[in-house]
Amino acid sequence: MESVSSKNIKNMDDALNFVYSFINYERKSNFRYDTKTFDMEKFEKFLEDIGSPHLKYKTIHVVGTKGKGSTSAILSSILKQAGYKTGTYTSPHLENIRERIMINGDAIEEKSFVSIMEYLRKFIESNSLELANNYRTTFELLTSTAFLHFAAENVDFAVIEAGLGARLDATNVIKPELVLITSISLDHTNILGDTIDKIAYEKAGAIKNGIHVISSPQHETVREVVGDIAIKNGSEVDFLIKDNLVKNIIMKENGIAFDYSGEDCEIHNLWLPLAGDYQGENALLAIKAFLSLSKDLKEDKRIIIKEGLENVRWRGRLEILSSNPLVVADVAHNPYSMKMLLSRIKSIFEYDRILCVLSISTNKDIPELCRILSSYCNNFYVTFAEPSRSSTFDVLNENLSKNPDNTVCFENSPKIALGKALNEAGKGELVLITGSVYLVGSLLSHFKEDERE
Image (cartoon, rainbow, N blue to C red; front, side):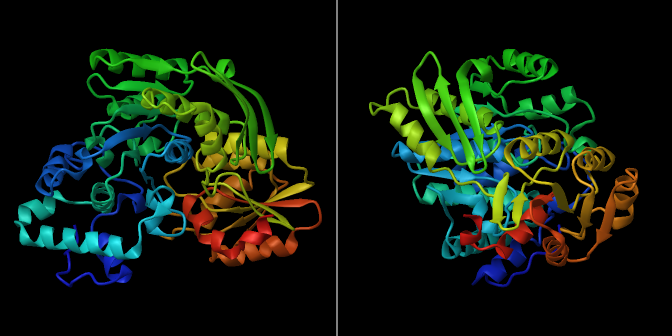
């Protein structure tokens, strides 16, 4: 940990300087992933010393590889529609760090963020050096901020998305009502493990004694790993079968329409303003979670679910940023999600060719990502979204150039790379921004709301 300044935190700049004075593993490519580096007992002790804010409301833990953020956003919207004051903690953010901590869809206000950071600064500095050293990471600091904010605002529920893995993730200190497991696939293989069963083991680390688990459809290996851990913990797991419950999906450019058909209820003509048929799987997980959490609710749950889905907002997921030229952004950054993204783009949009603005972090499967992208795109505008983590142009060019049809250019600035793609996009051509959360986040502000209509 770098030295923490004793300067009072008075504004957002001070707060950001403080939060980033701790180790930020989101911006590191390689580190030891073990109980010495991520000591959950020490973090739990810290939370206990500040009043155990994470135990003062009901929580839902969302873990998995793909769809965690979307599932969290959908469930939070439904819970809000049901009248529950609902906190949502997600990561990473796209444009503003305050996006990570929301209540009923509104980001934590600057005043509250600054106030909590100042409280934590005083607490850390007024205690022993040993305690300060136990509080080691930017993510732990942000997680504590979310817990404190939700407690101060007396939320009914908090939907908590795991950051990395689950077993050793700072969010795994909660005692949830439910654990939701989204689709598990290969990602962060240099940290979590290079096989699907190793990754499943890390994700299933969120399963606690006697806690109900609801899972998206999973690979057979994942089912075995999750099932074994659940049995050891005396927990029941419901593995959902999407095709039996989500039917008649109609994909449109700005979302999906579908029917839900379960033993608990049937709901027709649902609309979710998130594009891609895979969002039906995320919606199903959120619907099942809500029905499990609201057994005593007397209102018509079908109406709540319908309206909750319609009000979902979750940016950077197959999002249309401009219609002329057509610009689509998606934070896909592993082979599975990239393959799904490109398949959906082909199904949903009409275009002559794709011009791809691209940045990929060094810890991703670059050869496979480039191979998948090259089967759909031949024009690439490579850039640095996060200089400390983004792969070099030489590495991406080497992999993209394995397809002789590809043309690859490099721009240091994401905005210049985007400008070049926009200038070269002809009629009927689609500009795709992808490969990195940081890339999408840095370019959202380039587009005005009315350009997306």
